[in-house]
Length: 292
Image 1 (spheres, one colour):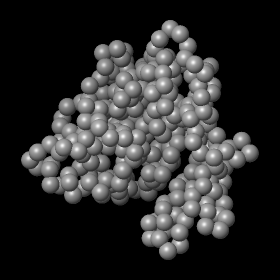
Image 2: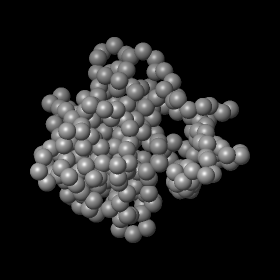
Image 3: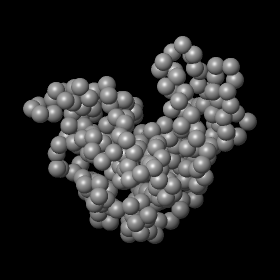
Image 4: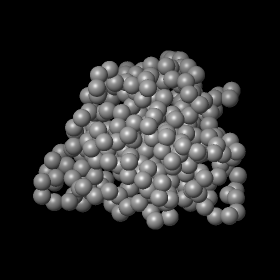
């Protein structure tokens, strides 16, 4: 069984052509990846004006969906999920590939409690020290250097978003959620708001929640709030990820040795809730079509 994504193209539409080019780049990248913590790409085919992409079917749902259903994760799940996300990132980074959109909605959990990185639509292969920056991302998880358009999309971007994702798992909300007011799961094209950013950055906090969060991340030296219930090792791990200077963030491979994840025990099944009772059975959250 595998998941199937169907995309329809319109030959006379410029945006459709751009989407086709981006999908081609994504397919080319995915075809070179094979790791237990990355959703496996199986193949694709074009039939008339439709593109069909086949990939591994992960029935457990995304971390985002599980957080909405069961609340914040317990410490055991924290350790295991974070370790496996890092393992996938270390593999990607060893191939000079940056994901650029790590967040709960893009991390799937299989029925055995193992996580898999998904949605590589923003991923880039870096041929030099960094790749040219494109203004795309999920605002609440976005690294300061991306917002400020500095240093390009180097690998350290993924470590910032990982720290944000750990906070998401700890609280069910992304960092800077006080600015939340719209659908936080939507990845946006930042070019649409760049003009607004330019107008407001110099003198006033913008009223738009997404732009306000980006203003805070890009200009403040403060860290997002780290919850008290997170262990001291967990707090240190988050601080390591959320260093504002990307050159100061540890690599994914180095963070695998951090005490917070070094001795993580793989889960036999999803351990989602911090409550003593086990959660209900995990339901299928994958909305894509299924091909067998």
